[in-house]
Image (cartoon, rainbow, N blue to C red; front, side):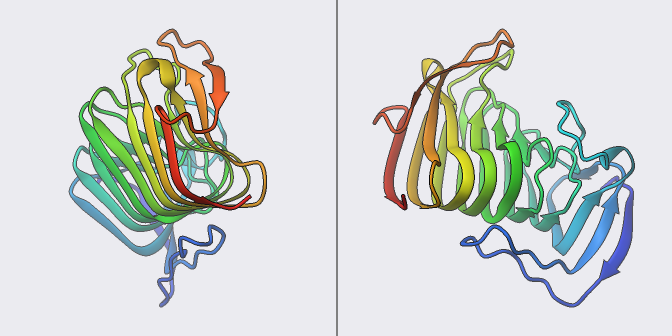
Length: 245
């Protein structure tokens, strides 16, 4: 692990957010991160809160920021709280697992996924205050993204399949056992013309005006994708077990 980390304080408690509530995290201590932490294998944060400092600490929404954690293909990040600022959160170069990871204030994105035939699993954790996307899916062909046992509140999109990447592919995602609390825009944004498919199951909506899925016409030109529909269509977006308004 190559990184610059300053230990600010360590307490005894390691308490993570229950997936039913995205607003409460109690950290075992704070660490300031001034250079991206490179992860191969398993990184267990043991309940520490990681906060961007130096070049990672401006708290902006600009595209192209560095991440606090950069996961190599096959890596696992677990038992971590990302505080504020969190820069561009987590980058996965290929298949990765995020287990019990919580974002207290999402920066540009909480996590971004890349690679071909990449299988991504987000299990447990929460995210709060995402002006735009929580999970950004820029993967090539093959693989899948699974988001389960997760809570989100005050967000734009929980999951977005890239609508204008220079290299596009049909992407598959599963979102299950999720609690989403308003304000929120949509759980999933997908590109129906590119063959994307999202399956939602066991979703609890708290508050009004949260869409299950937004349907877009994606492109590879960099232009802003066009929204062409909303809600489950039985083909590209399939939803079961949804409760709430």
